Length: 178
Image (cartoon, rainbow, N blue to C red; front, side, top):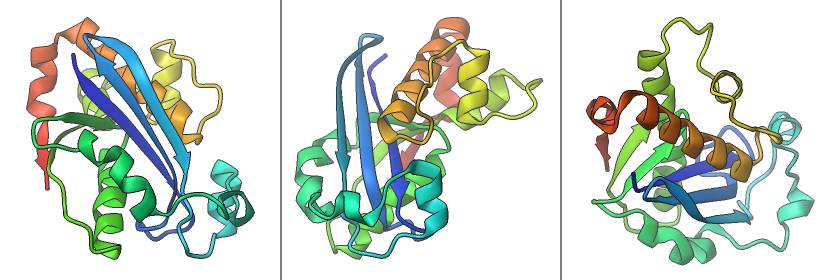
């Protein structure tokens, strides 16, 4: 499989408040590259979000803004590129809302949600949260809610599902994200 696993953390409830990004590149079923950056969201942080991911306004003060970071990663979001995330509706909305906020061109890409695949493939589990799936599939997740750790775990979940059930079993879950 070839795909990109993505994860974002946000400064507050607003989806256009990304304060960190992680991308994990998988080629031929192997992780070959990764990218992580803090992002200055140019908005206030809510204490609840900081409690979850540990990122504060002071930590991102000198980080690039979304428009400064986007040129480095936009090529990962092409119409033919498969992108995955755990709870992909959240991460895809962070991309979409951030592009809208800064009046940048929208992107289209193929999206597969490992929450949805996990619910279908492992229906007996009590929930399908990232840490639950990681524990169940014996995937290391040391720093949950760190975007890079979460993106690596998501990539490994999709790889494990493809190994266990075959790539064709995952195909019905791929949707074009616009």
